[in-house]
Length: 349
Image (cartoon, rainbow, N blue to C red):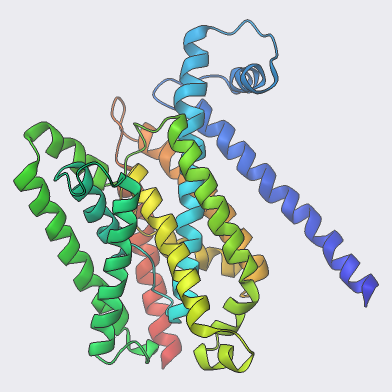
């Protein structure tokens, strides 16, 4: 038995090393490719200068572009992709619905409303941070969606899709509230900036955003990994989890709170980016299976790489312009959503 476990660990080591290597390569590529491409070797040298005190004759402008702009942006993109991916994974498991995702369920829209209310309408009088406002908005949105779904009789019967319909309704409501706040309180310049931000924007990301996004994504990741066995049980329903001695309500509150927190933080930094939490967990399940001990790290890793690549595409697809990253993820996520919907409906027959 011990030898079997040791063999399994040895088999996993190359996979883990490959995943980490792909993430590192994606970060380096994200720092290299942009409006002006910088040689890969230059990127490595700049990172060696900044991180290890190496001495290379690199132009100061190239150093500034790589370190202060592109590398910090790539790290935030990775943190955001990982956070949104595991948020979607948690929601899909707890709700037992393959279409659950913070964007579709209106959590991202609620976080956007909370953030805009703080930034534009001045709610809280400066005593509440943008991230706190987004977190409150995300929680309110989720509670509203769950309440509406329960009223429609769909929350307990997850195959009915009522939770998804409630999420669409909640998303539209909070998007309307966001538009109302902007129209009432923002000037023309603010309105343009906010509307671009709402589609997902990494252009203004700098190192202070890294120190917020990365620790939150890491802490939430650890929370989810710690509850991996509980999530395995929840995949068979709350009753199955309870029969195994799991505190259902406490675990649900912790996991949903973690999912709402990471969604809110990422929305407050980069805006609402859709479909990451929907597509990435399904891709990870296809690769590593349904066990959350493996599925959670795979989801975080795939989400991080996916959003870095999406950010690269958003910078180069239109010469001289930066496309909102939410447009890129939607172009990938919408067809994937359709495929998951069709396969789910066929499997239910």
